Image (cartoon, rainbow, N blue to C red):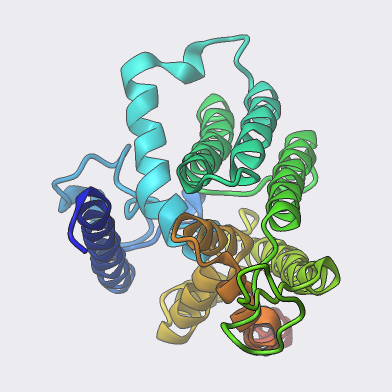
Length: 347
């Protein structure tokens, strides 16, 4: 039946398709940029190459162009945060100078987006699909603010590109606030399923009969919590592995103590390799941020139960496959980079 709701659905599907095309286009351009222009991951080595810098050929200003400052974390970051939210954060900061507001520290922003996550969870727990969709929008605003706190921190410390300052207080506070936001979202989903238990498919396994004689078998909360618990466990595994690989690859490939020579050449060789780019792309898909985007998309489309059922076991298989491939590659990359030290000592 044609009508306003069907027209809106068509518009949303079209926007989703355009967004995916944009992400694919940016992925291709990122690969070309890495292959043809110096990465300059180490500031002390930014002038050691004779190749034309990327900022000299791009028509998009580097302060809003995510392709200018390529870092390990940027390569591992999900498409939405890297290609969409990060430039929007920079544009907003350029307009109203958020990073110049002294009392608006990164930690204040981090704690504030926890409250937005709670508001989002309240909406997502609603019986009304329109409210649940509003909750999805609110949680994406929370994610945008999560990008904002990192942006403000980097601007005030004069850091270019996406980087994780592992071990700092801001790193742990940001992680804590992200965890609280995720907990709020999951609790909102639990409340929604408690009030709106999913049904078994049509006439399958009828458990009760209504006054009208129609079967309406409902799935118990135990099964709901089991499927949701599996997804939460996947989020935890993804988050732990993703943060680990950001830390170890930053230490391996963006070590500022490197002042040139064979070690730097090997770092650059890994950063520009197609296989490393493919591994990073896989983490863009399976990292915790993208998994949350996928979950929110399911809520928005009112297909949450179907999605949770589909990835109940498949998600673990995909995650562990990506982790195993990445771990093996990291061991080989580490040996490749640091073996040059042994070669130097033998000379």
